Length: 354
Ligand SMILES: Cc1cc2nc3c(=O)[nH]c(=O)nc-3n(C[C@H](O)[C@H](O)[C@H](O)COP(=O)(O)O)c2cc1C
Picture (cartoon, rainbow, N blue to C red):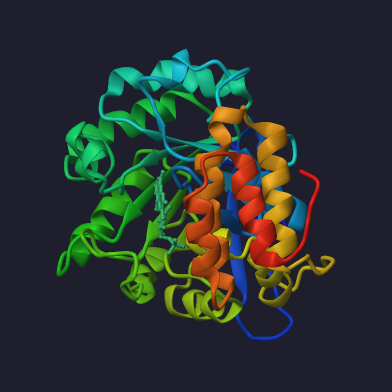
């Protein structure tokens, strides 16, 4: 590892990883303002995902090792200041889920200061502005992908956030529209100029479905021309995908979404096999992971918050099994957590004390 500090008012830490098994030399640049920030090591992050990137999944992944950076699911900047962390299922965290970036969907600059004040009080390590979400409810409110279409509003929001915090400022975008690659590059440069420290880029055009093959190669010019670290996102479900994505994009890091829910041990595999980290091999039997998840869910969340999240997680973990749709549909039909656990016990042919 090579540490290289530059006098820019904040420390810039450069880390070079030399993987054992191939010639890719990964570079991560992570900003540590006043030396207080945390390093994303390895440069692998859990994507923000509504209903999935909550404390139970984050802490499960943290236990398995290999994830260097966590995002929350997206939170409404307008409502965040009024959420009570003592009872909110969105704000619950445990100390192992670090560094933790809070993702905001936001449409108006007036919400920046109150939302960031709250993230400071919560002890967050960073804040992310959602500039890619295509969900109609988010777009209608002028946030997510709709915000990305209004550069003046993006500038206002990002520069205001920059003035208001020394935490890592991240933005998450998609690669924009077909044939508008130059526009995409200008957009990324504008974000960098306004003070974004870290950019997560989902390698699919706006409007493309998640089943579409990701376009990792579109990230290459962004990674070449920007100085901030770019985390490539989209369609990483295996160690081979991770390698291929890094080769095609030249990204400083990777962000995993659905692949991390299907296989929460995937970070551990990529950290060891691509980044050469000396980690103990993680548990990778889906049955064990499933019941660990349910256990965390029951410990962390109020009863009325558990069942929906268990169903959501089951949908993904079931993909590890040839007949996983039986597990997913039996849990989906359950009316209580007890019924869901019974359905999973029946599927796996075991009994667990939860
Ligand atoms: C259920 C679900 C919820 C998501 N919620 C968010 C979100 O809150 N914020 C966001 O920026 N992206 C969200 N996304 C997009 C993911 O962060 C990610 O960009 C996308 O799933 C592609 O990555 P993947 O192929 O690794 O899953 C969501 C995706 C899924 C499947």
